[in-house]
Amino acid sequence: MLEFLKSWYERKFSDPHAVTLFFLLIALVALLYFVGSLIIPVLVALVIAYLLEWPVIKLQNLGLARLSACASVMLLFAGVMIAVFVTMVPVLWQQAANLLQEAPSMLEQGKSFLMHLPERHPELINAQQIQNIVSNVESKVLEFGQQILSFSLTSLKDVVAWMIYLILVPLLVFFMLKDKIELTSGIETFLPKQRRLISQVWHEMNQQIMNYIRGKVIEIVIIGGASFIAFAIFDLRYAALLGVLVGLSVLIPFVGAALVTIPVAAVALFQFGLAPEFWYLLIAYGVIQVLDGNVLVPLLFSEAVDLNPVYIIVAVLFFGGLWGFWGVFFAIPLASLVRALLNAWTTEEKMIIKEA
Image 1 (cartoon, helix red, strand yellow):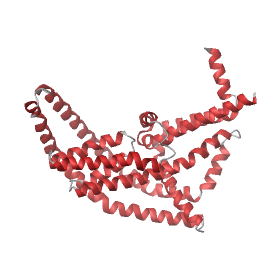
Image 2 (cartoon, helix red, strand yellow):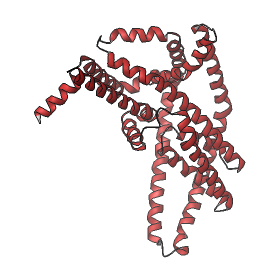
Image 3 (cartoon, helix red, strand yellow):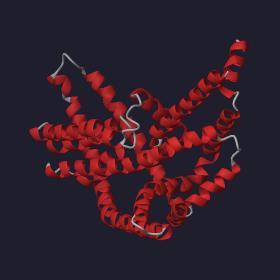
Image 4 (cartoon, one colour):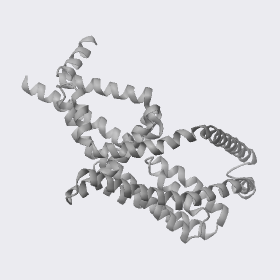
């Protein structure tokens, strides 16, 4: 066993470049795990900077200076965000409040529907099973309501922090864009000279992360907009709120679509019953999800779709458990990073064997 471990170590870490890459990864993981919550504004700014780098480059290609391009893009981005906040947030807030007010009656209607199932289908289900289901659902709803209440009470203390973030994050984004070359050069000065594998992995992942963030934003807008239009055509209540939820659900691969189906189906069932409109709405919603998974995702994430769905789900569970929302958001790039690291180490091992 010891000989096997020694042989493995010599194959994987005989090159100082591989050792440098390994310890850099350990340091980054430890940094994010222990102080990740303290640097959330930096992470948010980094994501936005990646998103805005593409239009900045396009403006530079048109002959604009880097500073002017960054300023123009930041002004446009700020204007869009303010417009979205002013027009959408009040509507979403009102619809969310109305949905919470109607939630008890929706639950009672669902409870009544379930309690009559044993009368209609006694061969499939009995009253005791229905009672157990209803009890479990009621306890989960009560627990969820308590969590929402506690979150709203504790979030009041974070208002000042959010106000600070609203000032710090745009400033960080602007300087990350403007001083990109200086910042990357400064980081390189702290790295050891044996960084060939680090450069290899970085060049492989840098463009992929940029494409992923841009593609994910485009996917959220398209799927959310298409869902809102479909819900509005069927005159579904809370169409804007449900459309936003469907759009945001794409942040969690596979699982998000399944989770957001529950509120969509519940609201449609409460409004239409088992009428044809209910089934037509679910069919339209299913078509949107199918087009998203089979057309939109391959177009936007051509570099990531070759990952097996099992790897993606494992990445969502693992990185989400480590870093919460950001782990889920970056699950696919992080899984691709692991693959790039394995490819780099495998390539390095083959080169060492060939030289030997």
